[in-house]
Picture 1 (tube, one colour):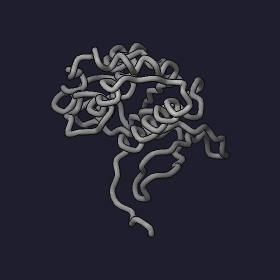
Picture 2 (cartoon, rainbow, N blue to C red):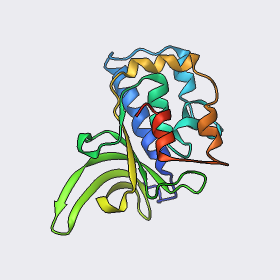
Picture 3 (cartoon, helix red, strand yellow):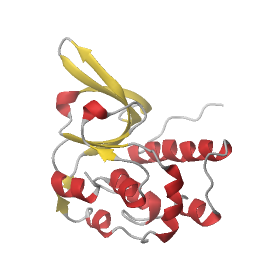
Length: 186
């Protein structure tokens, strides 16, 4: 039985990778989270900035903001430091928040071609859904990378504010790359 292809979202694709990573660590006994923390990971009807999913799914640097807030790992913006498996938020323009054009991805690597450098990533991509895509590095206006280094800090989610007001505001207002970077510890 094959499920027909349907629309999906980039943030949902990368959140799935995040959750599967957490599950794998728990199954191997490398991560213990109490019921309260696990409950916070469930996707419900959270708005942008609300809860874990609402942070991850928000406009702007949702994943990087969550990583900074809970100290899950470091955020950086130098693609030369990126490793396969890092979460990568691509900004196709320098707009952050309202009017933003971005893409939540998993960085896979760089390729040198005769016409320049290319960035390879995995996500939910138009038009084919989940899979790899390669784009010229020159098409990426900016990128934030988040590397999961201290997953045990996910336990802090139970004491985090329910809503991240910065991320929640990005549906209606604009931010900047520099402000977003500052909010993510860059």
